[in-house]
Image 1 (spheres, rainbow, N blue to C red):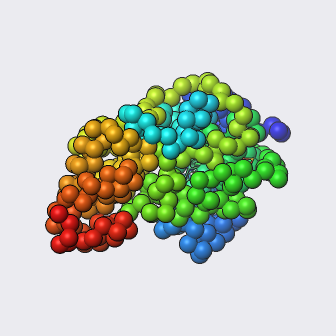
Image 2 (spheres, protein in one colour; image 1 turned 180 degrees about the vertical axis):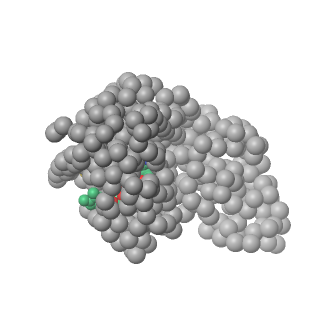
Image 3 (cartoon, rainbow, N blue to C red; image 1 turned 90 degrees about the horizontal axis):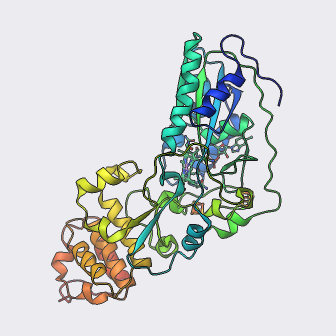
Length: 392
Ligand code: B12
Ligand code: SF4
Ligand code: SF4
């Protein structure tokens, strides 16, 4: 790498050291000109419907691919990356056997949320920004934000290549990383030697994705990606419910199988730990307030706890044990839920666990009440359970 020169203010190497001691694992610098390839990629995916209605960077692709719009007088973009701990090999094995019925039934949480990685990423970026400000420059931290395409800027800055699984892969740190930037009006010499694509002939992520969401050219169809389906509103698509296995939040499979990630390594600075496995019975027993207090840091559609229950019921149907009285109890409660979304997924879970009787024994009026979108009726029809008045 050539030497980075700051026209005024701190030297790049000093900024990198400051970022490292506060939570970053690497820092690189690039210019703020628009990234036309990324803009084109977003627009193409949007035109093909591969974004599945997501907003994020798709909401305003021109702004999201033009870092100069983030700050008046912007000259440089410092891109920071933080590695987090990959699930241990044992957890990875258990998760790959994700249809194993367990007692108590547990849902898996993706590694990037099993600890508060964004906290340390932000602290690292804030420390870099503070040093720039101290020298008289303006600096703004942007991370995981709709205003900037994090992976595209990271790749442009030379931090890694965009893998077939669409992840930014750092040659030493792999892809178990989170990314953020500091945009500044300080002029830092650009050194954007891109890391060459090292995927080569490999296509494991594409082959092993449980829903076939990644094509051979590294384009992801969000309509099939479990990480997105867990975050989107409406019913969980019936054709992907079994493939969901035990995943309750996020999906790590296309990183677990990637040979570029190597063996899981400990991280230099540990982030605050959170749950990596969630007891599904406990989740389904919790009140709305308790759910938001515990899982409010997740992306929950419209921040409505019924979506956590929806996801938990699909996972329960996949990994719960039908002989477990507690499982039957929470299914009974979910079948009586005021939410048609919850009732319809409870029908699926009960039937998948061979407990069709729990559904058939219910008065159809109670199952079908307040079902404006016809979710409950559709679920009953899918299991060929006759609608009212035959259900008794
Ligand atoms: C929307 C989104 C999602 C969506 C869609 C993901 C996707 N692949 O599009 C969903 C919900 C599915 C998702 C899932 C996950 N996400 Co996400 N997500 C985002 C978000 C908000 C925007 C991503 C985006 O712009 N997508 C649009 C499409 C078009 O992007 P793309 O296919 O990757 O194409 C880009 C590049 O390929 C590039 N490009 C294409 N051609 C070319 C050519 C050149 C030359 C260049 C330079 C660039 C370029 O341009 C495109 C736009 O950036 C970012 C945060 C952010 N603000 O950037 C996080 C982000 C990408 N997600 C992240 C993570 C951790 C995940 C998960 C691992 C979480 C999990 N365990 O469940 C999964 C991984 C699934 C996967 N394989 O992508 C990290 C990725 C870190 C990394 N090392 O790559 C990010 C960067 C968040 C962060 N700040 O750390 N995510
Ligand atoms: S996150 Fe999971 S579902 Fe989405 S592309 Fe990767 S392996 Fe497939
Ligand atoms: S699994 Fe193979 S193809 Fe996919 S990102 Fe990793 S190296 Fe690239």
